[in-house]
Image (cartoon, rainbow, N blue to C red):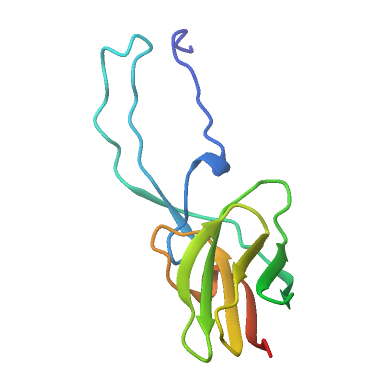
Length: 142
């Protein structure tokens, strides 16, 4: 015997937000009535697994002053954000910004080498091997 008023809701992975540094997702929910007069308490926090991303090829091109970075991943059907980390002249790469495409460009500022690391965008942008998509290694700009 089924309940006639119950509706199922499916939330797609793309809508779950960013992953943690260990490539898992934190999920918490509450139920709201259709007339929005009643709400449930928040659910307990669930830690779910996330898809593994296979790192693809990438390239860093210095075209005079602008530097272009392009990369690819195994995930092609869904647009996902990527965290961009850049380090100049042997310094450790630091978080710069989140890119919404598989390319990023920036201006060379009198440096001789650069290292670019691209990762799946996470809640706390910091370097993590489990999220790495592309690591250029040290690239000479002279």
